Amino acid sequence: MRWTLPQPFADLDHTADVGVAVEGDSAEEALARLVLAEAALLAGGGAVEARAEVELASSGEDLAGCAVGLLRELLYRFATARELAASCEVLRLSATEAAVRVGLGRWDPGLHGEGADLKAVTWHAARFERDGARWRAQVVFDI
Image (cartoon, rainbow, N blue to C red; front, side):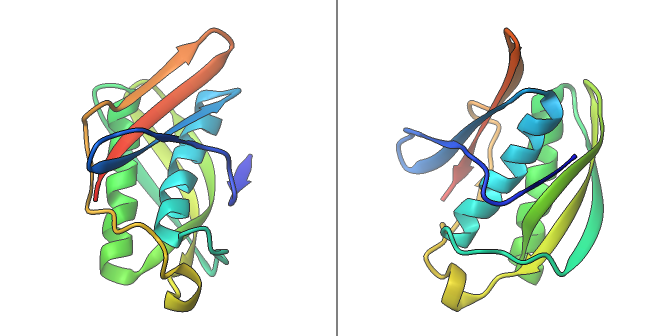
């Protein structure tokens, strides 16, 4: 399944940083929503049109580590090429590995100039876990 912007997320109250919390019916949905929450913060609510697709992979000690790795790769792409995620399809997800196909669009200062100036994806408060029938995930970004 492919998820696209906009996707629901909650802002986490965090001093001097910005955090997001998402949930989904599956771990895949929660991961895709984390990817798109990062893009929504960077885009400042402006629409993002996918113009290219890329496959990305990440590994970690757990699901939170995989998510942090993917978000760091996407933040690097934003910093170096001004590309934002417009869609996300989870290709594979296990306890220690994740692979996604992301539709990327160009950052436009006219549309996205109000976006957050994210500096880094932190380990602080990162979590990704099952909560009953739902999956919940969250990350904090340095600004």
